[in-house]
Length: 111
Length: 116
Image (spheres, each protein chain N blue to C red):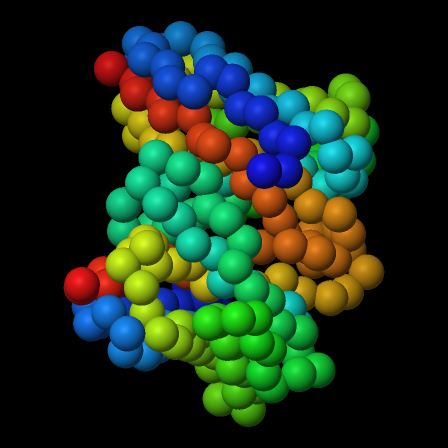
C-alpha cells in the first residue's frame, strides 16, 4: 500500500458541528486530493492541492475547505456539517502526471 | 455535465470468460486514462493506465484499449476470476500547464460480478 493514512476511519457527527478529516502521506508526493463517493455518483473531486499552501476547488467544493501546511498533511474541514455531506471520503496522492493512490476512506455520517 | 461516462452500472460474467468494461469521455483535452478497482470498504486501487499516444496497453490478464476518434476506452479481463468481482472505475486526466490538469475525473463505476 502507498503510505496514505486517513483519520478517523469512521465518524458520526451532528448537523451544524464542524468536522475535520485528516490525510497523511509518507510518499512526499506533490499532489493530494479529497474525493467523496456516493451511490450513483462515483468519485467526485472536492478539493486538491499541488503544493504546500497551494489548493484549488474541485467539482463539489461547496461547504468544504482544505488546508495544507506541510507536504505530508492535507486536511478537509466541514465548517458546519449537513446531512448531504454524509458520504465516504477518500484522500488520494500522486506524483506529477502519474496515477493516484487512494487511502482507505473515512465514512462520515451526519445525523 | 458528465465528462467520463460508464453506461453499464453492472456486468455479470462466467468465470473463465472475458469481461469487457466500457467507458466514454467527452473532453478532448484528456490524454491519460486509468482504470481502478474497488472492493467494499476499501479505497480504490490502481489497475492499469494508457496514454493517448497508445491504443493498447496490456498487463497480465488486463488490457486497456483506447479509441481516440470515438473517445472510447475499454478494459478487457481475460480470463475472468471470482476475485475480479468489484466495482471498476474509469478515470481520465489532461495535460496542460495548470495544476488542475492532473486531477482525475471519474466515471460512476461498473459493478462486475464473476460467477463461479
